[in-house]
Image (spheres, rainbow, N blue to C red):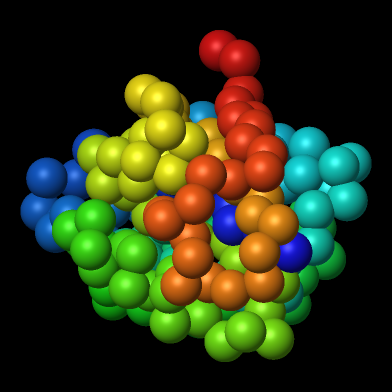
Length: 161
């Protein structure tokens, strides 16, 4: 069984116009939301085997805050450039290339790409607001099957505002 988590980064700041898009940090709400989502995931006993993040500051900080709450070692979060400004095919390539020993993969990235991928995997329109987590569970044991077969289970966790 394979489980894929797609996590859209928490709310980012637009205060400093001198920062590049990759450098934009989380704002105060984003920091609070990422920690709150991490606590929620911890209550659900979510334990990824691998966490991959976009190199954007806001995505990586979201990953770090969630990791702290669920007990995932921060130093084990890997940054993957393919998760930033990605095409759907790039995202699927990351998933399909995941080591078969990994059963639970958590990706941190951006919209509109993550909502597009979630919609494709779920077979229905899915909108991922900031800091939302889409979970897809597949009965098969192969990452290359993700996107070809419908998941056995799909859930969406989001913070209510």
